[in-house]
Image (cartoon, rainbow, N blue to C red):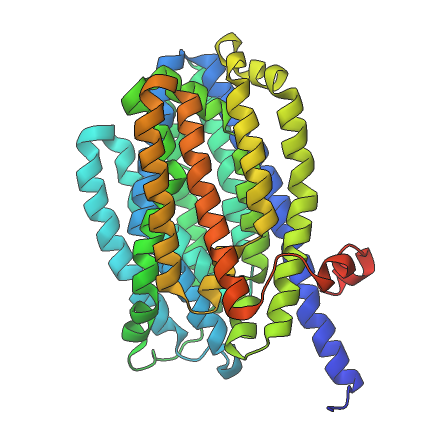
Amino acid sequence: MATVTPARLVAGLRRRGGVARGGAAGLAAAGVSAAAQFALVVVVTRAVSAAEAGAFFAATAVVLMAAGVAKLDAGNGLVFFIARAKASGHHGTSGYVRAATVPCVVAAIVATALLWPRVGPVAAIVPVIVLGDVLLAATRGFGSLRPTVLLDGMALPAAQLALVAAAALAGRPEWLPLAWALPYAPVLVLAALAVRRRTPRSPGLPGAGRDLWRYTAPRSFAGAIQAVFQRLDVVVVALLAGPAQAAVYTAATRFKVVGQLANQGLTQAVQARLVSALALGELARARELYQTATVWLVLLTWPVWLAYAALAPWLLAVFGPAYGTAAPVALVLAGTMMVATACGMVDVVLTAAGHTGLSLLNLLAAVACTLVLDLALVPAHGALGAVAGWSGGVLVKNLLPLWQLHRRYGLRPFGRHTGAALRLHTWAAI
């Protein structure tokens, strides 16, 4: 048995303390972002008609879908390779950054050209969104969560809210897409500076691009599917049931961003550590990270879902009189998100273990389930049919990898680390 020296103990506590600090920072950013996005929806639904609000929500959903596809999941590939290069002082990581960004920018420019005739000038923001997101992912690979928290989690949604509110108060609904898009530009500039500051000035490693895209290629398609899955419901409702129903659906499901952002905040804090633990065969450490993140995700989000289910008729009235009838949509949303958060970050663990192809198949199954249910239910039931389709896809997306992780690694979202994580002094040391 290895001797536990004071130096080794201190190093371990420092390593673990980074998860707690990163998790707290990520969750704080998630809270700010969720509040700002909720307020933005309130501003838009109160300032313009349901049809105009639905058109705005559909346009931004299409832009975000396109950006998600064009990112090619290169950000997760950068986190994987940069985190693995920590032992060598991140030597040669500049090659990975270049290899990741060039194809993404090309894909984003193509997406802009295709979208411009449909959504107008707001399509021009797609390359900016894509490049900024990939560069922020690179900073997480270096072990720094601060740029993501400050820029993407706080500054971006706050600036979008301020500019959209200004456009709404000016009575110019045609300015809403531009007001929403503009804040992405300074985020890109600051993200680029953050990466440049952290990247060692050394030549790229031979074959960096080949290695990066060999790992990322299956995830590129999966990332595209994931981006479509996240925004497809709003677009489908707008196409099949009209923009007014799309506005009702967007308002009623806006609270799902709470669970998504809380999960994202914890994921950003532990993803690089999960990659390192699984790469080194430290299954016990991976289990500890997974179970700790899951229990805190449940504790932080379940009270929100229970409260939302109970108070939905009153909360939805905040958006305007036309939105209070969407309480059944809120009930389906709350129940689905409680199941999803209880599964934990299953897909992140699966891809951290290197099973990117399996993750892709899971996403394809989830999107297929959503599309089938949407096409069957949305024309007759509008927003309620859309949330039923989304719910089916979410359950498939979480339960499939949950079963796969249990079968392959014996990993479960709850276990012996769950109780320990509930003790604050233990959480502080994770």
